[in-house]
Amino acid sequence: MSSTEAHAFWDDVYAARAEQQQPKPNQRLTEIVPGQAPGDALDLGCGGGGDALWLAEQGWRVTAVDISAVAADRLTALANARGLGDRITAARHDLGAGLPAGEFDLVCAHYLHTPFDLDRASVLRAAAHALRAGGRLVVVDHGSIAPWSWDQNPDLRHPPPQEVAADLALDPRAWAVERADSPRRTATGPDGSTAELTDHVLVIRRADG
Image 1 (cartoon, rainbow, N blue to C red):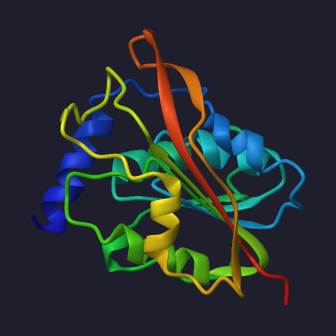
Image 2 (cartoon, one colour):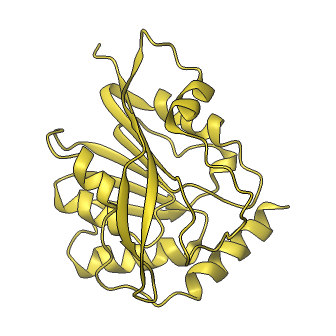
């Protein structure tokens, strides 16, 4: 399928959702990031914008990208309304064409899943290479299917974080796996319903110097 079809699909997904005025950050991000000095962050697939807004409130300068212009535009509006417009740059960006330019102290990719062709391993490998010394790549994937997910394929496989790390084929002398586990959490869907879900969490740190 073409990138135009992917843009239209994700624009429709976000347009169908009520615009959130107080989007929440992902739980795993708020567990992992505290303790790391704020710097430059790249949010891959920013979605509703909760992660980017939370990071900016913690002092980070955030480049937030999503294939959906609806998502990016909503985040820009929220950032401006909160006085964070100088700390967040949100834009439509197709990761299949590469990453935004720059070096980062943090790259986060929460639930970066799509029904369209995307060489995710190449995207995440490039993200690891975009880290400055001491920077972290945080990848959080679905380990189970939420009742409200757009993808209800019962045959969908959820690779564990160790497998995701192996697929990146990073030199262990330069990048170290700090965390690779599958914790559970209670999540709330757009309709207010709750479910117990599994996350696959991978944190990779680039060596100092």
